[in-house]
Image 1 (cartoon, one colour):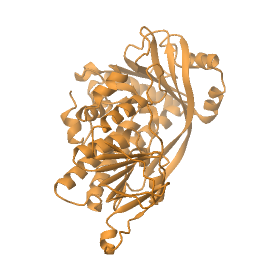
Image 2: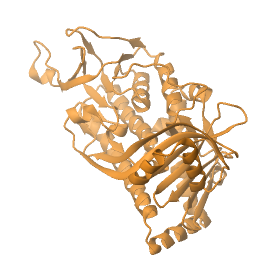
Image 3: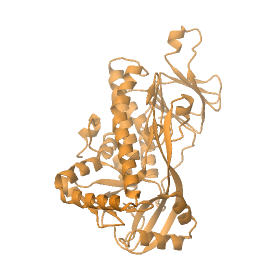
Image 4: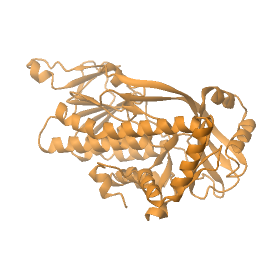
Length: 431
């Protein structure tokens, strides 16, 4: 892998694809394209440094589905993730704090070894960067903000030719030119804004409080979530940095007033509130690390692509974290986009061709839209305090828990198996 720090306004780097954003989603796409023989310029405003720390837990984690794990396995990245830290979970419990409704899922119900893995985001990013170094097709341009996006005006070339490529200008004046620019730069995507792509965006009125917590009793390889009147609280099992200790990553989504109140508590007060809200299911809360909060905003772009441009991951869609599907939807985005681009590359088609990109948009938009609507329905339904709604949701939870066929469908969704799964995720799904 090449790493460049372009410094001259006359410096023009040309590649087949330019990816803006080198987080989990953007770096995964870079690896997928490089393996297909497509040259990539990977651009990020941050300067990469080792983010995963063996002795310190990251408060941002992802629930990696079997399908996403299969993608990492196909890229040779999964062993590097496991080498750092990954906690498999075999069971899930979901219940309503205001009733008796509860669902229990188990991997054994579908003959799977686990339902997924909880992995620190920093561990995933470091493993991806380790893999990136093996590919000469990838050039990293880190520590550089993109300042403009335009069609490339190639000197002495006919206008029809010059309009077949996009040009990104970096803050140091250098240019990156490619037939296709991919925005993988998060919910506040600069690429999306520069391309003038409209987005449906609305605040949920909630904030997510995240932290790593040490607790008295074992999590027993179980991911748990309780629906409280002010929002859901999840305890996700994470691998302990110290043998014999039990740790979980929490995501406490609460209405903004309640979240502000909780954030104002000191650690002892917050631990007591957390223990009470979770009904003591893992015993006493013994220690907190890295508590932080951020607003929850749902977004979905009006279109995923333009000629020579595509959006993936949070740049295209953001949803409530109550099902832990945000990162997995992003990995599905890049797996599908890479599949379409590799097919176009093999037949010699232009990578920025609108027809090629629209196939990616069609394949991903419906799935992402359905998941956003489903999560919003759960959030609103479980947030309602109307007696009839409370009764209906508890009856529904108990009914689903007793009806095996429905549970099996839900478990398959939790594993990440869905319609139109990219081929390389299918091939490695059982590995």
